[in-house]
Length: 204
Image (cartoon, rainbow, N blue to C red; front, side):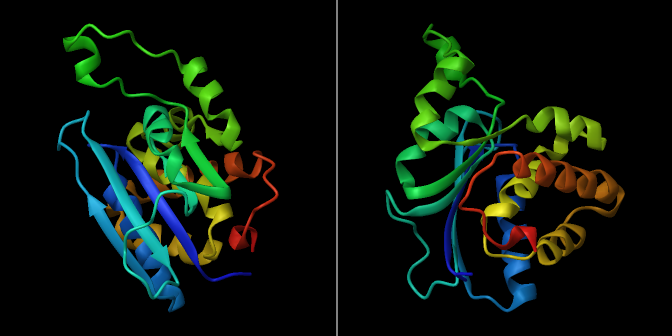
């Protein structure tokens, strides 16, 4: 198993992208794996694009070049499309089927993109598509969709299940711990149904 992975997490403001990147960083620290990262914050309110670059086991700079991401975790389907050109050949795209329509679409009277159209455009990347909202609600809180996505993606990054789960318990608020653990497990189960052959250690 390789111990290097260039991982890009993308979403919009308010979806918990930064917490997700911190959880992965914590899992790296638990395993003693070098990690470098860089974050670009969008608007604090929903609508602003947010991206987190995470380079696991890398000694190079924190930013991931276009066409070189081993894994992209997209908390929003439109953001998955926006950043899909970052994916390396043979890389894995794990995307939430939910969409946050940018305010500019309504304010400038642009046509609202259909979900099926976006999914069709992403098909070339053979994405692992996750109904994160439904899984999160079943876990106890719609606010745990970011942890659902981490659970799904945990099968495709070179960090152990134990480290990822432990990092979740360390970084989420105690009152939300039960819901977040359920969300992580539910996402992991959903990711396991994607059928990708490039799965890494997460199954360990």
